[in-house]
Image (cartoon, rainbow, N blue to C red; front, side, top):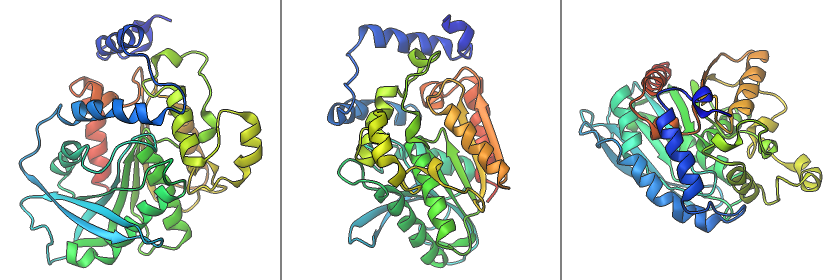
Length: 334
């Protein structure tokens, strides 16, 4: 398939570079090789985060909370410097942010610049959760950690200067999947006031899609082997094997895999953004369609000819500029 006919024209030079690097660079790690993926991700995450200068109008402060199983969870508060770190007058909106990393990689702080830029662009403070990774911690630990962060923000809203009725959740990639699961937990446990919005950027929602794509496989940034590795580490069985899915799939919680939820009714207003050449596009569109059918307000963007993490790879192309403006607007729903 001709890359120039399938990619966004402005993305094509980067796409060709990625294809060339796949053909001539270091071979990708084997399926289930988590340690190599973690090592290879470190310089990539640093490159992404350093692509933009750190905003000078955003500061940060660390807090901690203890989860129900006794784990001490780091929470990093990013806030406009014009405000004190702990304002005394409530009223601000706020976002609980869940970082990506395929369920197996990255920590809070790896993308300090990127989160700070969102705060600078929107004027809304973000609280990032340093959730536990797989396979050291199996699902639904990740979503429960995210929900613990959400509960902390609710319980400390007044001292943080936050209006409880104006809290949303934001996540990209696996962070988007964890955010979606945390939103399900918040709905099911009757969090009050309810979440105002969920903003899901190319979210990783369904373990059952870990199969080769007949048309677009070579254009995926997050490869099928990566997807199998992440989901298998999180769920504790090999998701690519039908016999394993048959044996274990019926017991998978929607707090691990949001697409397995029986109902999406009652979820908050939702924004989803995904590239048309993203590994997750079909599951994201399907999730959006289910929410619409069940009465949830949804804004869905499919960006033609763009892969996973397109805005990090090409921050200055027109499609990225438009996507960033849409995401800022979604945060300002709050």
